[in-house]
Amino acid sequence: MTTLPTTLAMIAASITVTTAFSVQNADLNNDGIVDGIDLVSVTSNLGQACDGDCPADLNNDGIINTSDIMELMQQWGEVEGFVAEQAQSATITPTDSSDSSIEDKRDLSWQGQDPVLLDAIYYDQYTEFFSHGGFNRWNTAKEYNQGEHVQSWAAENNIAVQPMVYGSVDWDHDNNLTEEDKTNFAIWLDEYVPADYEGPLCLDLEGQWWGMLDTTNQAVMDTVINVYLEHLEVAKSLRPNAKIGFWGFPKKTHTNPNIQTASVDRLLSACTAIFPDVYEWNPGGNDSARLQLHVERAMEMVHGQTPVYAQTSPRYKTSSTSPRYLHDQAEFMRDQVHSSLNAVWTDAYGKEHRIQGIALWDAYTYVSQFTEGWSGMTLDERKALWNDLDLMHVDFLTEMKTLVDVASAAASARRSSAQQNSDEAAAVEAAAVEAAAQVAAAQAAAEAAAAERQRQKSRLVKQLNSTKVRFAQSSNSYRKSAASYSKNRKSWSQAKRAFSKAKRKYSKGSKGYKRALAQYKKSRKNVQRASRSFRKNRTSYRAARVAMNNAKSTWKQANATWSQTAQQEQTLLASN
Image 1 (tube, helix red, strand yellow):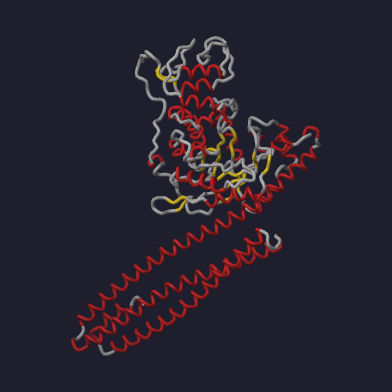
Image 2 (tube, rainbow, N blue to C red):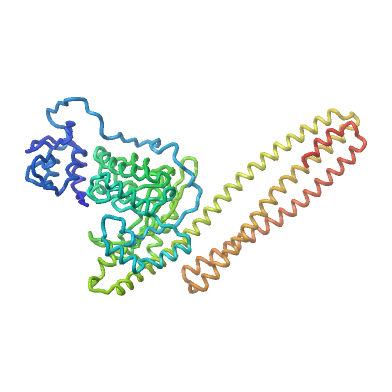
């Protein structure tokens, strides 16, 4: 895929009005303005030799190259003396940067679910249906079971694969989306992604377009967004239930308040998922706060209405080459995993939003790229190196799963707390309604009673109502405390088992040991507190029940001689 240098894109974005004449007019679409649309026409054909009519060869040197881009820069802006032959229709959809840009009828059924861990590792087997890689790459990987340890571990731990489409729908990576590309993309989907798939589907469209997403020029940005939207709509039409977006989008430049790019809201509103990356090239440094803020601002950009899947990688690079180095596991967990799981954005209604999932990405192609003497190695020697990376991935994923499980437990606790608050409010309201109804019934009975019995009857009715209210309240508290005690006992049992495993797996004083011990102590404290609350509420419940039964007995005895009030008695006691 041809890559447009970012510097040239920034030049295009920064120029406002320039009038110049060259051998050939740079207004390629004849709309009177040399702008981002014309720039894309040139960059989409970079490297093409021209024989005959070739409008994008602005300097007429026989090839479309960076010289033509520079020539276009000289002509950027309105074309002097331009007269339109007929009314032109807009080719770029206006950008809407308001909050209403997020679709009102978006599927929100994913909200409230626990975060998930995803395997996004790029195994060479996956290149079988891609246009790149070749037979030897995918077939050898299949024959020698590349990634077998992670895949076995993932199956045992119910860890799903995050489908990644490299080059997105542009199957041959030539920057020209054809029907053949769409057909090949559909074939790949049918092979790897079920038709009713509802999980994340990540399109990786970088190349020449990636750098242009940093532009400050809205016309250029809208042109690039149109390209991304074309890919996105193809994918959504084939897998309408999937949560689809682009790797690394929104970019760190979009979430950095110190960098002002043109608006990308139109693309954000079209994505049904976003996949911001938390990669970092700063080994030894603490980037957790910066990356957590990146994820939080990404959630804010979609107003909490689109699921967020954070993309992590153990790789980093120290130059313009590919990422050949691997982060220390502790630094990776702190900077990329903890920061993503800790990210929280609170909306205007006080609702908290967190990531929907977190994926680990790496590629086995780096093993061959950065291993000296690879070409002379036997396949068994290569397999041994693959296994080293594979086992490292298992270690990383295992610790990631531990952190995701902790985050899931916290999410469950938040849901339980919210439900408890809701139940308590409903119980108070129900008790108030019930009490009001009983008072009304007592008043009706009092009006029908004989005058000489009025004071005694009123006292008994009020006593009965009071005991019923207390009983209803204590019964509700008793049930809730019983449920809380049962839940905390279960959590404590799980924590004890986890601690037992940790004692066998980790040395005393290690992070894993301390983390399991802390969780064990916390669970034990919670179950003790729940036990005390349970016993207290049980005693209150029993006392309230005795009081209510005594009140009922007194009421019945008093009514033995009140035949004229039998109807009112049945009404009062029917609900008990």
